[in-house]
Length: 619
Image (cartoon, rainbow, N blue to C red):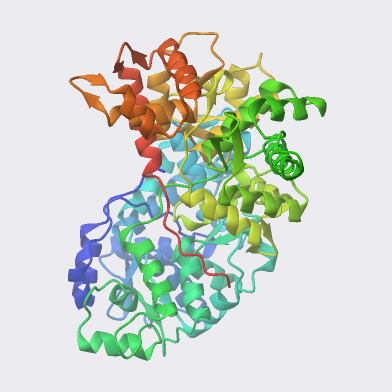
């Protein structure tokens, strides 16, 4: 994912001053903090703070007769990086002044904010995600009436267009540095909280606790109306640490989090980590410490930016089942083998088009779920890989035969700091058996792990090429708009193809129905621009394997085909057929890789590097 902010220098220096461990840490320079909570009471306090500031004063606890409730709301603002405590009072940060201006300007359009309902969230995780989605669409919300409605309600959009004031909200996040400050009560609530995604009704937390966790970017809510919640990646890892025995004596704060990132902690720091159950007496990280260190890395060093997924449909699972069945028959009759012709014959007898089976074989190979080998009878036969067997076994147990990219993203998106999943994603994940009662199921963890680790060798057919062409290089586009542009194509086929492209990592899907080209998708789009009309498959796993092998065996400016054939792992017949197709596709010319072929290789390298490291703890 793109669009992360620069870590503020003043925040870095203040942390350095407060903790001697910071010198060992390289803070991420590309991250966006998006979680912040502003309700009526928060807005009233910001108004007071601005009034004091204009008088050259600060808001004082005693002189201004601040109540316990006021202090609770001020804590939310402090955790979000909008105010800072000074002596016996509070003052606005730069980000706080920006939010104050936003409140004033938006109130001019929507009416006095003092008339807001007490529980109305003017700004929250779901609101900022909507602003970010709108920004990715260059402010055009014509094809997303629900987001337009929610932002217009807040004075941040007008006539289906994002207003400049909304950009000020993002600017505030860019300059804010939220804090971690978990009290024993909050830690106990976090420990008991299902990690999500799930319906917000299952949250075992008070309203104030929810707001505090949201301000610390440990909890986020879905689009468009926040019906579902999720702990963020950092929130999930802190929860895992607490369940595994982490026991801070009082408050879990930034100082402790930053200590976790120190490579060689001083004796005093080691003692502190041992006291809270993060480290043993020999200086080794305990399971709780490892999870806490993961949380600190997500917060301060390397937030997850790629939201991986996979997409498999009913045909894919039926083809896998048929491969297994044919191998079972082979044990009784060696003449029966799961070669391409036999597979297509069996599936055709069950009403499946041969072209559909061929496409599915390519899809399965693209995810490494099947492999092809030459049999003793000189036939190219298919067999399931270990991953393929695991995936098929899971779906058979669940009695389900589909995995949507959006369903998997309902889990993987929660691990990022800057993305709230759609309610739609969470609903689909529940229907497909990936989440339940606020927890990822065993199936959910399996497919999320596959999405994070699998090597993708995409298949792009003619329709998918048209979809990629419809998505601009420079901005996102709402799926409804793509459907309008491709109105002559079957609607369901277009939606399925978008799901496929997201699973391959060529399209990024964002909440609110926005899609955009990933960096790999941009490279593939540029490569395919030379491909003539009328060709069914523009990219296949075989094409990518041959290109990769050929690029590694260039001698005197030409491809060494003998070495390439040995390196690509395909048999001679498949290589000959694929090379012929590559020449028609203009990825090869004579014995050289063309510019288009090089672009495919660039995109494939991006996909290979787009894996996500996530330590899953089943708790």
